[in-house]
Length: 381
Image (cartoon, rainbow, N blue to C red; front, side, top):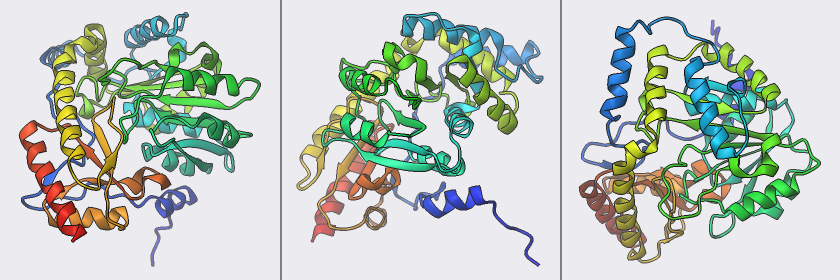
């Protein structure tokens, strides 16, 4: 007798989500598939965690997050937003993914629409489906910027608009003007905006403006952040969400049900990271910039490849010349010893593209780009 019967929520997610889950890299292949810094967590942060363990931070903590860490986050957000934000609006989460998922589960009812500009991070539609909502995909413009008129048209009667900025997978940084236009167009509606700014400190050109700094967004903004990318702390699983107090309370209720309290010592290390600030990762950013420049130059010289130069995050998202589905192309590239991600994972308009992560050293990138160039020429025939 088969006693397993997946819930409707699981069925909704698995029916629509086809991306691989941690498949092993073929022997001898080079993988540029992971969205993870290749650097170690800075020593000062590790030492803070070790010290916290010796000091007894080994017990259950506050379900809303370490009070001192929440206060620190509130102060940083207040400075960015230009207004006072208290710790009662802050939840420390089990990584950025839990912040995003808890927000969507707390704010979206079955049948409600959630507008998602894409290509974008695949967690958003998965979480929407888990909540019983309906993802409404709106392609970004050819330059990977927001198509604000199309977003606003799709957002009529929508509960939520959600996006990341800078963008995984395209590396785009949305302009201040487009964010202001979006905020203005949402006036008089009850549509919320979920802004995931995980790559906010990985920007290579001037121009990044946080949604926190857009006054007309503040009353409807749910801001999600993580320490994973900036501080190379992916395995520590600490993120946070900041929202108007009544919305934050609902998000807390979902998060504590799914996750209980976040690791106490990891939160003390996160407090140290935020006190040190993103400057401690300046060497990482300089390396990413050098790698970005190398990848851009190489891709420009591969016949038939089209892409918009990334100005944030550590990804290049490129269209290949072959008339093949992205997942087929992905498999062809594996035969050439290179593992990437299929663009179709990131939304309908990602079909015909592949995502490359340049969170790898230059020697690895050279080998990978050599294989990509050779693969495209040979597959093209």
